[in-house]
Length: 64
Image 1 (cartoon, rainbow, N blue to C red):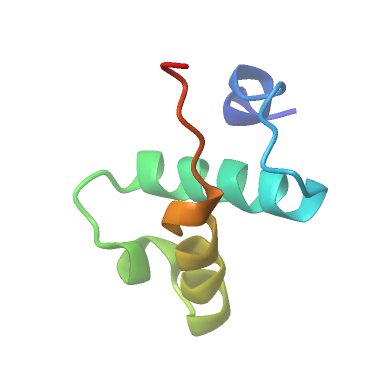
Image 2: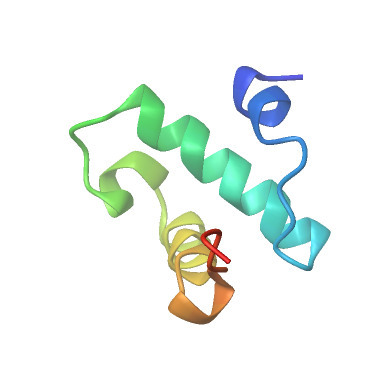
């Protein structure tokens, strides 16, 4: 299990696939902190998956 998977093991984006995508995105962005999302992801499919995770309707308000 990666550090990101351990750190975010309780993540709940209402779909296990989205949880895995978010963790993969976190790992990629942390490996290349100055890269854009497309640069960090490396290919079009992973870039689109990253944008899917980042959609505003996927976010929850943790202040509530």
